[in-house]
Length: 134
Image 1: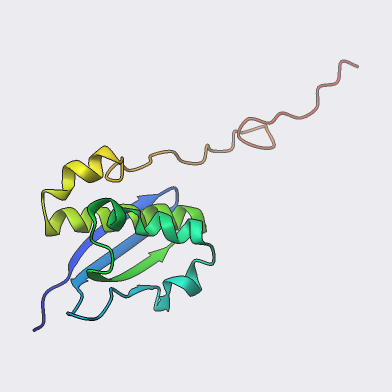
Image 2: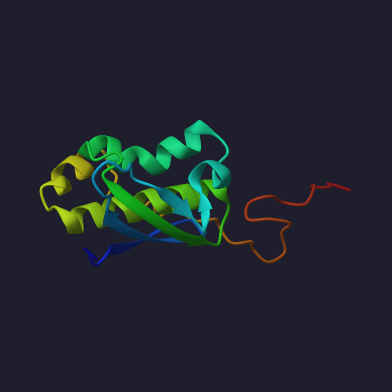
């Protein structure tokens, strides 16, 4: 029984994540792979793993889907935020009733905050060189 996977994209800061969800077979728990590595290997801390799993906890679908994630760009925290958004969007594609629950937890909102650009004549975005009166 080959089912077509549900796919979605999530972004956060400079990170982009693509998620493919397929229903897990009966008796087998949902496996999560990130860039062809296990989630535990790619995300070392429980806090980062919980950010990725949050859409499943909210919709009560933990271990019901196999998830394959491909992420690039940014750092580990930006990537986890992007993965969470991608999973949430894919879950909405699977079942539209999840939308209200995920929206309530702000899991379908893209965090648009980006790094501020460096300004000309300054060492950083806001930092200034030391002022000298004389």
